[in-house]
Length: 71
Length: 558
Image (cartoon, rainbow over all chains, first blue to last red; front, side, top):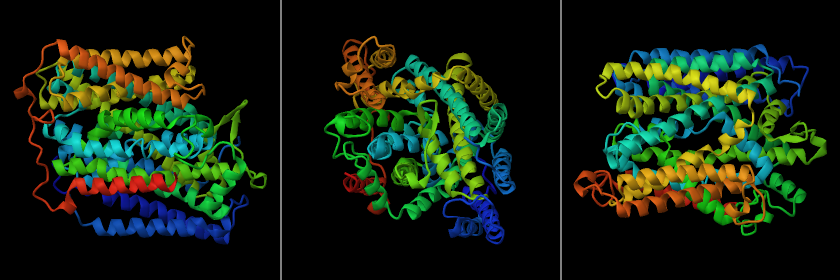
């Protein structure tokens, strides 16, 4: 394969986890101040915030580590 | 059921995923210049990339929904599909079979059959694999639309066409490489999208031990929480199967037949950059395979524990009087996930569906182009022409999948037949490969007729039980009725029939010379692999570690 300059797969994985995790984290913050009418089981534990945050950390780390790498 | 409602943030996450996979296809397009780039991703992947893709090609959303539902139905016995039904075969592929596959520089499994036996065996397997792949791809598409329609209220046609066009788009653009890239993205999305169900389930119920205790209290006659201790009597386990059926049918024939000969998964190992990476591919994947039950089996057990507690308010959906077991995972998502996380959970399922379809289509376009088109129809095709044919066959393959999906929509019982399709094609093929790879005097005619009669016998046994031509107990050697036990035993008999016919015919037909089989058969090939690297970096070392973990898991849940 002519791979001159091709980004590694981990760059893309990090990117999508960071973006979607960021959106979920932000929605969790919003829902904390504006709770939805239909509450899910364990909604009080704020899963959006800690799970979204975990995704941002994991995906962000992967993205930052590989952003300057090529295969 | 009332459909799971999606909010703006959920839609945004789903749209980002669709845009992302198309973007990856467009990005990789510029690096796809030759047929080897398109069909084998340039043979440049590390074992991490090839290994995760190897596992993800098998990890479709149908499996996630189906195995969680099956756990609700059969209990922890479903974990056998992930442990004895996968790990020994994956390690055997990495240690013993991969050197013959990879070193012969073949492009596909039928390609190996051509070198080891002859053209007719290759074409027979190529055609049966291509038909199987397209049928499975179409049925997956239908199942995806069914799930999206049932749980999200989405339109059938839009769901099928949107995902089919997306898959056709990115696979046509850059072939196996974009399929592999999206499979790895899918792997991470599934873990982040669905593992949270298990975590929240444990938090709600209290602990893993509490989940098991509740199930044991509810069901004291039949064991739903053990793997082997109730397997000596089929009446005592949820799957109604004897341990011999699990070991011979699932652990040996079905598992080895799928993991060592199904081109859909093995193609990912062919994309590795060298022999060591190719051997490490299934070995690395075995570690990730072993932990998957902590998503699917655990979610199924959580669903059982919740459903037997009236205060939880959790019940599975019903289609008339039939329990819809596949509803377990979507209902758990609806129970635990607030807006935002719902979008992630749905995206994980969508990613699983689409990556599974892309896997089928990329395997189909390779087998069609190399083993049918170039082998039979156009033997002098140029590199550029084969690349063009790969792209055309991708689009045609997706169109045929769509037609199959509409066929299945009008004829839902076709789904039942698809359950057994792997035992029709893969179980006999494993006998052919095993004998051909390890016994030099197996002949081309022996392999061909063994394969033909093995496949026909498996198909016949399926129809015979289905239409009551004879009793299921003749196959399962048990008075207890169980579809799963019948699948296991039918695979075993098909393998045995294929093996016996192959050996008998080989005794009376012309053998290939030993010189022709160098590099293809054990005993005639130099097998000093990776002897110049430290032991801790050798595939054998990691295979032993994997085997130890596998044994410990089985003892833990004995």
